[in-house]
Image (cartoon, rainbow, N blue to C red; front, side):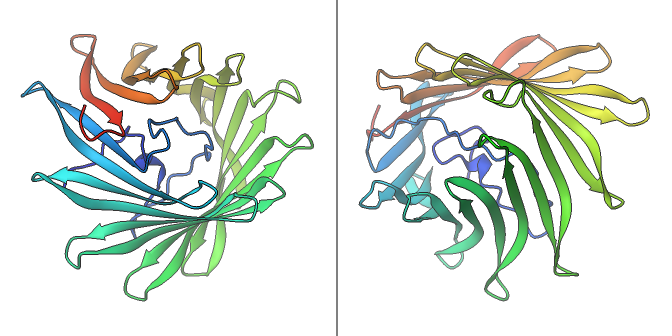
Length: 315
């Protein structure tokens, strides 16, 4: 079975956080915004990958989506193209409350041994009014056939309704308690702007300790254009540069470029790492994406993958 590319965006595989039994969940800020993919109200989206050897576009994966009467997706499953056939890979089922807010997301993986869908992760979201209050992640335990707590996000808001704090807890299977793990505190330049800084703290020795921060810039639409991440050096009492993300948009607000950089402490400068460029159609749906990796020897971007998204079976 081929590996789904980390930057593929139909179903946003990288955001699923399917945790293995021994892996520590990655603690990050939940993002609500998703890129608009070329669905165009269709129920099947095909992803094609460019084959450099043959110079042709070949099938990579397809997503099949079912909807309820209110046009909310209720099922989305991914098949990958293997041996000239479509083979099941991943499936997500969604449930909603009376306000059409998503309250449950069940991720299942295809078991080639039993030829059945097997539970992997359950994400349950509770709300206070229209705001998300808690997001609970659970993992399926096959031996006992039940959901096991893994991680939860407690989200807090300021008096104007902006998200200003997220507390992440990990479940302790031995004590059956939730243990503090990490928290993010948002800072605002003014009450009506998005957060310009996010401070990250980790729980250690029964207290919160500062471990990092994000500096964030936005365009006039409120879209994030730059995020610079720092790590706190407690011995030097200073911030150390770590990662930088740059986002570029077209006049319609579509993200057409993403660049990831890492700080080189030896040379004291930012080094390119990954990037992608995207093309959209007249309806602002993404139809093509090209991914690159930075070659530090040649100091050039090298193409690592080229993809097209279409509701047509051929391109």
